Length: 370
Image (cartoon, rainbow, N blue to C red):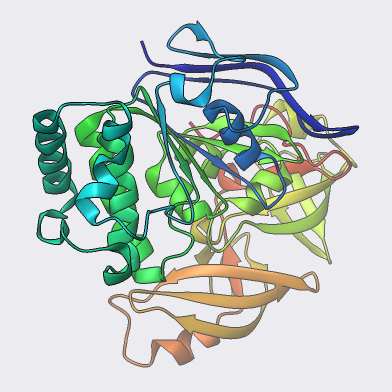
């Protein structure tokens, strides 16, 4: 078993705590992504796993072995850095083989390993080139090759794609996903890019201020965020937030705001929340454009439309705050930009509205989408 277990892991620089006793278990062969804004502690956590930062408190184990006092070179982990960290005076083959040479592997074993890894990563034609002669994507593949060739128990990725342009990032995301599927090595990946997190992860760990806010599969976090923070962080565009008050006096609870009302799901937590100040979380993807006269229609004031080909983002105002709808443009008449620009209302299935407590920012219980 090559799982990674963090128990009450904490990190402080002097009197300043930056990671506050987090618990996390990464299962064997799992791809886990740590995501969060800058300064949330995700890279510090990764560096503690690698042994590059000393653990202030708590216990770290890899493959069932206590690792707190084990040197980085003896942890059997391989790390891919943001800045590639390649040796400029060595060619691609020598960069990939460097770790094996340090271990004093035989020339035959090194040559075979370099050939295999370069084949996996599409670097066979570049083995004699130096890093200065490679593109950004090729350099990142060399950095990955140097990690893969060691056949570690755990791969650690520290924002490896942040220096690449948008097209290369998309390409390399697919490369990393294929690589993990092929090698099946336990992987922990740090990023601030929620698109990377959603597309790469088996499970996502959302961090905030040195603490874990939520752990789950990409769709669990997308559909059922536990807090306003998670709801606003995952999703592009992010979840719309509407301040409202619950009225549970009728047959079904409703959320009231700006003279309008939105039906809510008939759940115990909402039925018991009469008069409570809440925040409604509404995904742009869950909204349906609605014309006048449609029951349950919420009126909005459209500002502009971003046409993105098969879909469009309708930017509007609701309760004097921005509100975005993601609408499909396929099979619509030519000139759909003008049509979408005339949108003045929407409906949404009550079960798809996420309700958060206005004071705590936490989701009310019992409303998860299964």
